[in-house]
Image 1: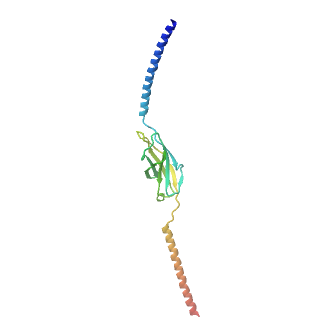
Image 2 (image 1 turned 30 degrees about the horizontal axis):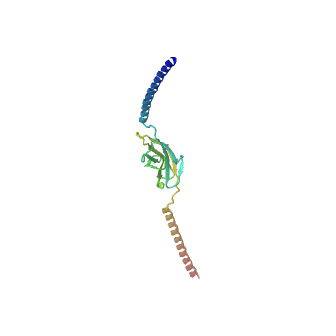
Image 3 (image 1 turned 90 degrees about the vertical axis):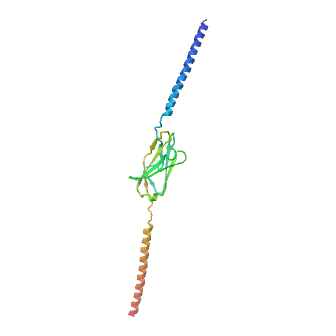
Length: 193
């Protein structure tokens, strides 16, 4: 009889426990789904992380007529083409605001060309702006890097041509004067004899 009473109490307790576990799981599942849907609806508040690959230091000296600016951009929602721009300015004016091209992985490249047309031996400021592809399109602006344009001085061909012309005219004039003087000296010596 004790066994019968004990087994009945045990079965009732197990049923209550199973009910508690099942109901608790349903409640947990609903809470989890609510938290998950809240997480999905959260806006992306973090902009892309922009790291310079080239140049990577302030004061980098550029000595070539073209230069590749390379950045690494990481984000959960990577930027789309057209959403990464390089901005190059001197200390007062914005000179370039152009799209960068996506390369391998997270790399983006801009080829800065015709550097010989820019003022030489001054600092330029390079910054990169990027907007991620999240629904709210969060953007970031990189740190400002200062680069120094140090192209070899161009030889002014017009000046060299003019100098060579002056030298040639001077040599011809000197030769002509010498020729005339020799003739005069010969005449004088023939008269004196």
